[in-house]
Amino acid sequence: MKLLQRLLPHPILTLLLTLTWLLLVNGFSLNSLVFGFGLGLVIPFFTQPFWPDRPRLVKPLKVIQYILLVLYDIVVANVVVAKIVVFKSNANRQPNWVTIPLDLRTPEAITTLAGTITMTPGTLTADVSAEGHALLVHCLDAPDPEAVRDDIKQRYERRLMEIFE
Amino acid sequence: MEQFFELLITAFLIMAGLFGLVGSFGLLKLNDAMSRLHAPTKATTLGVGGVLLASMANAYANGPYLSVHELMITLFLLLTAPITANFIAKVHIHQRESRNSLPTAGEDGAWATKNLPDTDEG
Image (cartoon, rainbow over all chains, first blue to last red; front, side):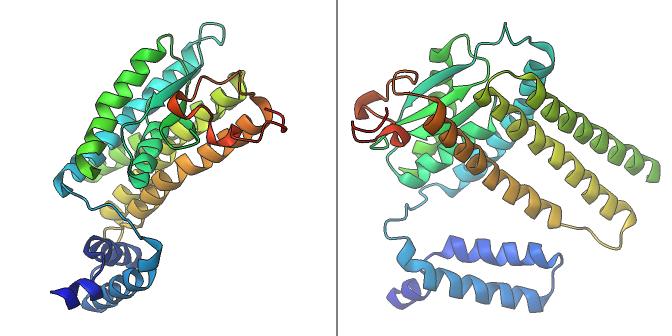
């Protein structure tokens, strides 16, 4: 068991690399499966030192749910932003900076949240605070910054909390 | 069936074209640097996504096999788009914003990009 853990330090990454290789080859064959799995074994083994405190995913099913939610939100975001760009005059638009205090502490989780915010409706992560306890977010059109903050905390941060911490 | 795929591919391409157009239009129309960042990061993801979906549908309907490279492009695009946007935003903060023009940074007191010694310009 110990030996297996040393040879396979990151089983999810192994799986992901194998899958990525198959997708890059653009077709399924035993050859590419074996080669992809080989890559999946070697790369995590040698990149191990780069991940000293990597977070353990507590609930993998929630990850899939989160990805689907974000994909859906990206589509909605595109329509919302397109509407603002085309139909709202610059004088009526209220661009705004919003501070989002963070409850998340894992760096990987904060990075995910920042990426999610950038991809979703009219918001864009610009900076993180000096000690990583808050995110600086720019809104394309936010008459009510508090609502944006609460929405992001409720919709994304709460879910990431469940996944990472 | 062929007709159905033709329609599907056309729909994806038209959608992609529209979003690409809106993204470029946003660059021209919006009046401050940070807002201009929004248009390309958002509108182009669906613009490019539409072309890729059309490409997949085309490969499935007319090609020899189902192509999945498009999924990889989508994935890498979704992973890298926030990073480019973040870098441009950081440059903007460096050059155009001061500590007073940004909101407070909560308990930490300063934003990472503006966390400079006091002798520097704030």
